[in-house]
Image 1 (spheres, rainbow, N blue to C red):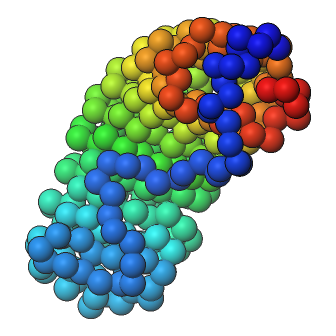
Image 2: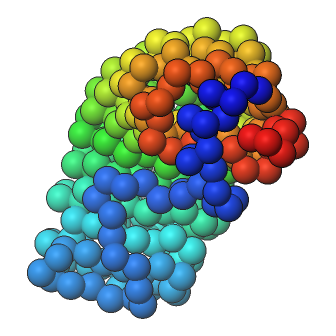
Amino acid sequence: MSLSLLGSLAGCRGEPVEPQLELSTDSVTAGAPNRSAASADADLRGTEISTERLRSVVADGAVKRLRLAGSDIDDKGLAILAELRELEFLDLVDCPRLSEGALRSVGQMTRLRNLRLSGPAVTDEVLTELSGLQQLAALLLQQTAVTDAGLSALKSLPNLRELNLYATPVTDGAVGVLATLPRLEKLGLRGTGVKGADVAAFEAMAGVVELDLSETDFRNSGLAHVARIRSLRRLNLWLTLVDDDGLEALRGRDDLESLNLDNLTGISDAS
């Protein structure tokens, strides 16, 4: 790799940093289970949830942001929450008692702006049922069963700006669909099957500012197309297959604010 390119990349490297799985839109303060009427937050993460407790949340009527990650909420409990007409943020990550059928009902919570789902019960069919969430701006699909074909349902979400597909088994075949999302700014593909095997569709991601390709078999040929995303400012290539030759594609991209090249075995010590 040339010294001029090395100079432009040197300030972007550092210690290995695991990519964030948090979606930034409407973030909720972490902490012990609590609810604040002033902030309209309900935090029930990791708790045993009774029907009475859920009904009290619904009865309040003011809750807009609800965290249930790691809780034992089941299908009956989720049905109760359907009465929360003003809900904007819902975190259902690591809730194994929820079935595919119950998760489809989330599509009826039409005020949602930030939704977090995980697990094999999240299928293409569930994603199709989310088409009514016209205000949805941020979506996490973590370790789900969603496929390339299922992602086509995202075209019906006109306000989607942040999408994280962490460890969901999508491949290069999904890139063309993702490139059609008109307002997409942040895209997380960590741990997916995306390899970037000469996928020119990356170039069509005109508004993407942040792209996470870490822990994938992403290759040099794909980076050549990623480098042409002119809006891109933050790129994570941690634990990919990109090497010195591939990084030549980033020559002249001095506008990159963050570039993670840690744990790339094909990068020379000089870089």
